[in-house]
Image (cartoon, rainbow, N blue to C red; front, side):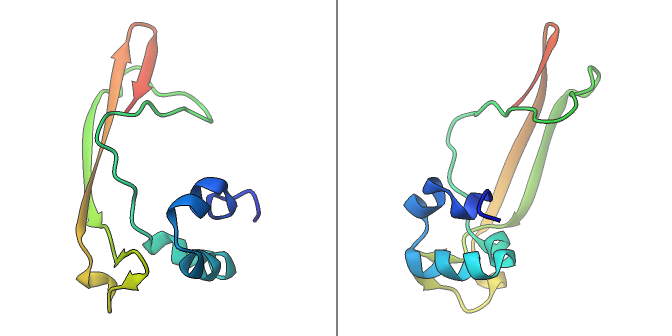
Length: 99
């Protein structure tokens, strides 16, 4: 449990203490937390297995985004802002990359 993201320094840096303590008590609440904004491609590390050579392209995922601003929580998670995530699988010679 203590090895999860919600017990990391990064989570402490970006999540208000009152909200972080509730997530640490009931980790399912972390699934409703807003995603951090990323404005440039970040290469992902493959931690298990490998990316198939013929997997190439981009997938967009549209779903719930921010459900709070600071410590001010929206009434219902349907009220939150939308969020679009983009994942790109790219062949780079003998190495496949994920962004």
